[in-house]
Image (tube, rainbow, N blue to C red; front, top):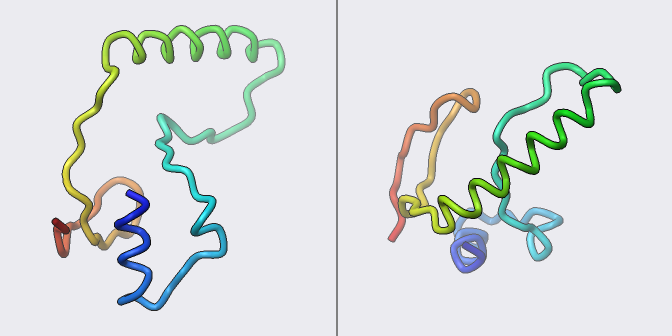
Length: 84
């Protein structure tokens, strides 16, 4: 992914300030409102359990080739150009 990011920075003429330090991540859900303090421990336990399950059951996740996309929100990404 780093090689793709480096290669695309040139033709697009854009290099984000954290380009060299960026670490790939995914998000399971976005927090809509703050979790009540008395629920945080239960949430953390469930999160840790889920993370361990993913580690055991899905150690490798196959993904599609990188694509240049257009999107209005995080619900749909229209692939304009599939790379590689």
